[in-house]
Structures are given as C-alpha cells and as structure tokens.
Amino acid sequence: MNGAESFFLGLLSAGVLLYSLGAWAAVWGLRRHQDPKAANPPSRWPVISVVLAARNEAENIADCLAALCAQDYPLERYEIIVVDDHSTDGTREIAERFGSQVQPRVRVLALGDLGDPNLRGKQHALDLGIRASRGEIIANTDADCVPPPSWLRTIAERMTPETDLLLGFSQCDRPGDGSGLFAKLQSLELIGLFGADVAALSWGQPLACTGNNLAYRRRVYEVLGGFSKLGETVHDDNLFLLWIQQQSRFQMRAVFCPETTVVTRPMSSWKAFLRQRLRWATASAEVSLPALWFAVVLYGTELLVLLALIGGGIGWVSPAWSLALVGLKWLPEWCLLLESLRRLRRYDLTRYLLPVVLFHGLYVVLVGVPSLLAQIEWKDRKVPRTPSATT
Image (cartoon, rainbow, N blue to C red; front, side, top):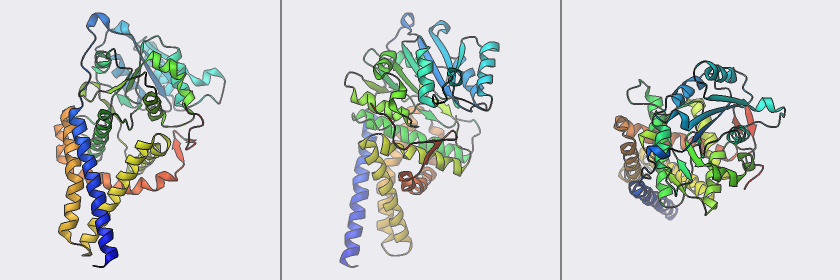
C-alpha cells in the first residue's frame, strides 16, 4: 500500500469515526430529552385553532377532517379552518360538504375567492386561515395526515407557560395496519430522522421540524407578521423554526410521544419517495448552517462507507477493516433508532433495523448531489430555490 492509499484510508477512517462520535452525542441528546410536563387542568383548556392548508387533497382530506372532529378535547374549545389553495380535484367541495353535513364547526375558506391570482401557496393559505381564527394556540397539520384523538389535548397539556412553539412529529403507518415493507421502512426512517431532530434540539441546536404537526402561540405568529414574510418556498416550516430560534424571546420544545404523533401517507413508489426526499434535501441549503452541515456530513459519511464496502468486496482493503467502519457507523444509528422507537412505543418496527440503514444509505447517496441542483416542484408548481423574502 503506497502513501496515497494509506492517507486515503486514514482520512476515510477519521471521517467515519467523527460521524460516529456525533451520532453517539445524538443518542445521548435524545435520552436526556424530556417532553414538557402537562400544565393545563381541564378548567383552563385554551382555545385552539386548527388551520389546514390544502391543495388537491381530495383523496385524503375527509379522513383528516374526521380525525380532527373526533378529538377528545372540549368541543367548544377548538375550531377547524380549512383553506383551499386553488385545488382542481374537488378538495374544496369535499371539505364544504363535510362542514355542512357532518360537522358545522369545520369552516372552509379559499384563496381563489380573494380574486388575486398571485395569492397562492401554503404561506398565503395559512395566513388567511390564521387571521380568520380565534384561538390563542394555532395548530397546523396537513390534509394527508390523521392525528390521534389525543392530539389537541396533549398539545394543550404540554404547551407550558414558558413554551411558545411545540414541535410534533409523524410516522407513515400504525402497528398492525397491514402496511407493506416499503411503508414500514419509510416509517422507521422518518422516526429516526425526527429522533435526530429532538436530539439536536436538546443540545440547543434545532435542525428541522415538520409542518404537519406544529403548534404555536398566536403572539408568535403576530410578531412574525404572517408566513408570507418567509417568501415563496416549500420549506416554510423550517424557515419558521429558524425565525423562532433567532428570536430570543420565544422558546421551543418538542413532544416525542404517541399521543401527539400524526400518521402521514407513505410514498407509494420509489420515484415518488426520491422526489420527496430530494425536495427535503434542498431545505438544508435554504434554512440554516447547522442543517447544511448535517446534510453534508451525512452524505459524506454514507459515501465513505459505501466506498469502504466496495473496497472490501473487491479486495482493495481488508474486509475486516471495511466491516469495522460499517459497524462504527451503524451501531450508534441503531441505538438512536431504538431510543426513538421506545419513545413512540413502536417496538414492532425493530425487525426492520438492518434493512432501514441500507435503505437510508442508498437514497442519501442518490439524492445528495442532485439536491444541490434540482428545481423544486411541489403540487405541480415550481418554486424558487431561495425564498424571495426572509425575516
């Protein structure tokens, strides 16, 4: 082995070792995380406004609304506002029919009724719904999600006086629902990503959040001045998180438990999955430096481990050394996944621990470089890579 090869192998080993140390720090961070304790007795339940922005969700919105109407929260203490974003598939009609025939508390607004074709997108839809709402707490989810019956109650309980923003999370299946392997892998991988987010937050460095499970006090929104201030982007949730982080007056917490975890639809094909993850990966360059570094380190490590496996397979390096690097990377990842599953009581997914690390490594390598160049497209709309306005 010449000097150049030794240097490369040493660099590869050092890179994986540094990643492993960071992953162990994430495991520690997740274990030290404590969900905020229940604070609101029944006599003080706050009014919550659930604001749902929807575009072309005719297949999903009825299930979402049914779940929202079945919350174990006092009926007079919450409202549901659906804002249609120029849907062309009957989403608005389904929501209006639901409100008139099933649950009168469901209100439906539409951006199309405002007469301005430039008012489109999730940010404008959220602004319209929030400004028409009355709750002191705003809760957001997506039309393709099904919140558990305890969702609003747990949000109200955990929104302690010192909490301004509450981060919730999602999974792609339920135990025993008959989902196939592809859905199970997506669910486990998503839970692991959220576990890493919670770990980062416990160290005071939030990386990301999901707009399908988010709650915040109205005063936070009023200081922001509206989601449209964030510019035209598909990453409004992460930009909102970044804005909160920059505002020292506001405090954010995460709730990582089954009572607040919503179920979202898994991608039905590899093509749809890769398109979704490509869109997510572009958020790193738009949002914050820590998130960008996380993406770069993750992609680099996956690539290094892939090179180590190939090198061990063709005899260029020792297979034992190659497998040692793989173990160095996978062991803390498995521990992070196991801790995340323990938090959500999803022990049924432990059998997929080995497949998911292969699944995760494959798609990360596939979307890593393209995410730097890809045109973002969401709901048949192309979106600028960089928001047109920031706070």
